[in-house]
Length: 438
Image (cartoon, rainbow, N blue to C red; front, side):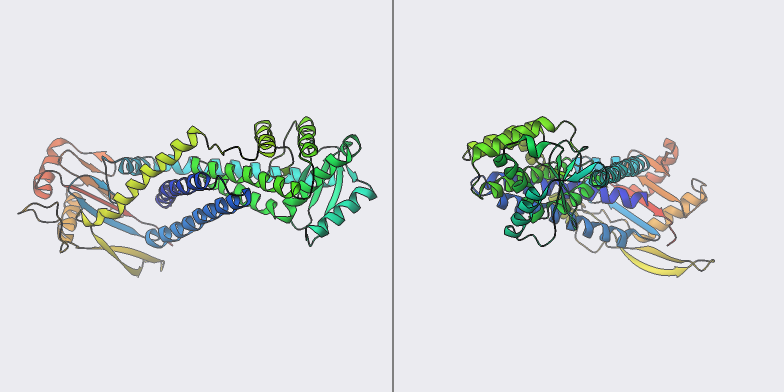
């Protein structure tokens, strides 16, 4: 299982870089379009990443479930199609070496973040039910009328809360707008209307559900800056969309900006996973600047541009992976199903020789490594008692070393095996066998 998780994480690295490229291009090429358009494109990028990861997970389980045995041979140390001297190959090699640590770190962090999300959702549920009271007939009727004009087909409750520190939307099926106690009476009517229009825009757009989906992706891919960055961009554009929707209802920009500033004074302890009106202080200043000067160009920041450049570099490594099969002697595998003594069905990957394909890296007189040679090498390791259990075996043999089950063998043993099986400089032979019952 640790091998499967590591392979999924590795796929997420290069798929995430594609997400970064797509998000960066969206931000660069849509500077003159509406926030709604940018928001939609960024969401499609994120959904595309999630769909690609679902395919990668299914493919990984389909090809590594049950018993897995593989042999790979190359003319330079290669791992899953990458040269070990290449960046991608080094990353894969490092992940294989520290697979147990990686899996445990990912699992524990995911559990902690899941607990944090559940705690945040529990806090929001408490906000709706504890220390809340009605907003009054006038403002509730105003919300009802505005909901009808926004074509919202579910009742929206407006509640005052002693716990809320800023106006926010909570819930999807039964949404509620929570405002800090006293805010409705302390702010001018025009500013209160601006706040309510903004929050109803969130409900009309179903932003609460999208926000929860983003939270799930941030839990699973907490380690990937591209996912975090794209989520950050989506949240910014979401607020811009709601700002535009509220301002399109003939509100004065001056009243809207004053409402933002007034709510920032309340917004001391933001609550996660709710859709708060003011947002962070830095984001608030950017929103005000955008409202007052709508032609200001979008700035994705130098750090974001570097992320896009890094993603382009990793795309080059991915292209190298695609070309790997044509440049190296590889093996293909075929599944056969059998039952063990306990009647448990096992799937065994049987290695077949694929040496008939032309290999431009083989010099004249150099023959590819065959299935028979692989079996002979394994039997010799058993005979020399370098391994005792054929169901738990991995080795790597090249010019420089022989490593069996992560143990480097003495030079005399390495030289004897290298003279017999390596035969020419640059050849690397690796073998792994993992026994897992379904």
